[in-house]
Amino acid sequence: MENQEEELYGKIFDEIPLISEEHLDLILYSMSNEEALYFLIHACKSAYHRGVFSIGESEILSKAIRILSKKDTQTTE
Image 1 (cartoon, rainbow, N blue to C red):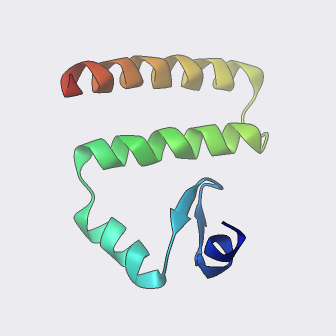
Image 2: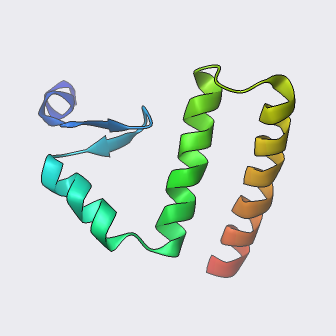
């Protein structure tokens, strides 16, 4: 496991593994609507953990993520 982390190019939003610069290009050029939503949710969660948002902004984003996550889960079922 430790060896795998050393091989990573980095992590997107402190959570999503990035293998190489080519992997980043692949993500950017082939992103679907579902993947875009996935990245937006992780970006918001990452920013929250970094203390970027006020309490009110965090509440709004939390609610928006729950709503979008429910809709996304319901459409894939």
